[in-house]
Image (cartoon, rainbow, N blue to C red; front, side, top):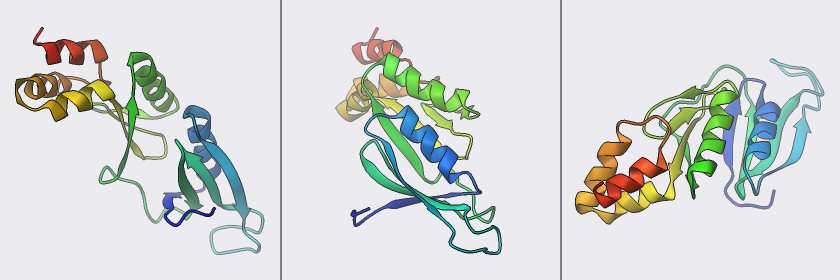
Length: 159
């Protein structure tokens, strides 16, 4: 990787599995390198996957098989901006149906513990509009798990 800033995701042995799932799920994504341990180490053996390098929606990431010491939490999440309900459904369902779990307000969590915000652009536009449009869209969002684009659009228009 030639990038100067690379986000590193910590996994307990599942970095390659996660990277393959992410790159299969999202466009403009690719698993670019698998690095294996050159020798035995305290929690593994020579040849075990130690890191993976991948791009996700055009951004550089590295997955590190660091063991069970650290786990992801909601203080860091990935927001994926979608253009319509079909794209929203596709990403949400891929994450949830692959061992993940639903949450609220467009949030879900993948099976490795990373949080995702699957956020339709219309919701962001509504929240950025301010005033009554923003309030109505916000109140509608607060009742949802996966975001319903038609409901957000109706709220934006006061219907």
